[in-house]
Image 1: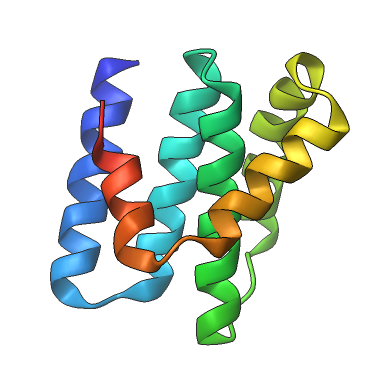
Image 2 (image 1 turned 135 degrees about the vertical axis):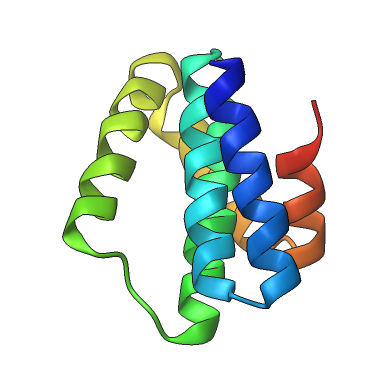
Length: 108
């Protein structure tokens, strides 16, 4: 899990430096999946919400493969959080400013 986290963190920092909002979003999704694997259920939901909000901001949508990836890790999150708790975490992430979401994603 540490290797995956390091790779997604590097991708996030690189995407941010390049100004690629779509890849920032995809990196946030990757880090949300890592959070889910680590049992950080609320954080996974929060990062998924932030990723989704960023995509909306730029008028993009997830490709089907990326949507399937998200659904897989969110399925795990749903097994551990109530629907209300997941909705609250996603809403919190959607409300985050982009830079705050990146800061959250990069924190350990």
